[in-house]
Image 1 (tube, rainbow, N blue to C red):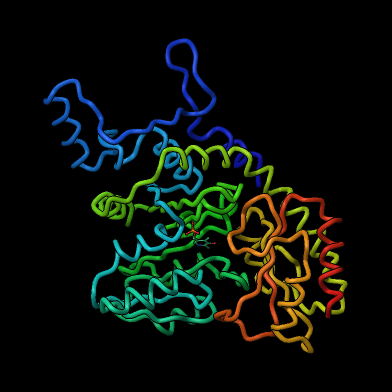
Image 2: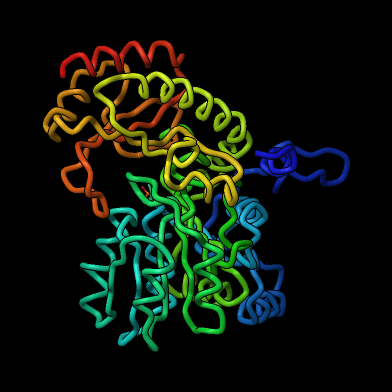
Length: 384
Ligand SMILES: *Cc1c(COP(=O)(O)O)cnc(C)c1O
């Protein structure tokens, strides 16, 4: 992460000095109703709101605390508007709900976050929205574009196998079309990847992960570019999407230390990977920051950092049940899915869409001493 991005993470939406003094952090404002000094003021605020201005006018429409988080994420993502959602998944779902209509066609990358696939398969399909999955990158999208293709949706990198797609090439392909390019940017958050600057129309973040950073909250954000922001914002308000000011405060607190944590996650991950690579039970490391990864060149061109998340493929002689035995033998790694906290995790999956190789284990490397984690992994691999 560059010096400037670090500064942004520390300074964006900080507390203000009002009069002579102020607090470093914006205060937590909890409310339902807002009181107006008179009816004419209330009407004026409602008129501004109807015209698209974000006005502090009702708790469910946001408070100064949630606005501070929205503004910080919006600044980092370079959005026209950012809105918050009670979970990362609600943020994932919102562009589908807002930007698509019955009869539309959507292209989704094979490696999207599992619950995003479920939104497509279990919800959109039933509402006459044609969801088609593609494996690979922009060449595959090009083959599948139809006159009614309204959206291309991907995680970059993809879930679990961390394949990287060429976002500027995708954007070039969609230029001049009424097709929205929507990216789940959780991996690259905060500040390591900027989908909107690379041509995307929407960037989604599960703030639950590295922004929260402590495995103690769930929250999501959607940042829209000029083609989508107003529509996304109006629909989020119409649908009553709202988050707790306490969670927004926690996420802002996480944001301040995110660059420091990410640097350490990345360093520890490099040490663990350097050791794993030398183990005969390990065939391949799936991590775009790794020089041997097929996505490395794109990662190097478009990303400004990496995190603690990667998978390994075991040698061909092993089955998925062997991978499960390794994970069960680990003592310092938690068995859990939601990464981005300070702790190390390991997990296996019964199905990995878009993966045709051998047995996989997904790791999140935390802030513990990597020497301890390597010792634990040595004990785990020893069961094979
Ligand atoms: C975790 C995650 C989400 C969903 O976040 P929740 O807050 O758990 O709903 C969405 N996308 C990606 C890539 C994630 O890792």
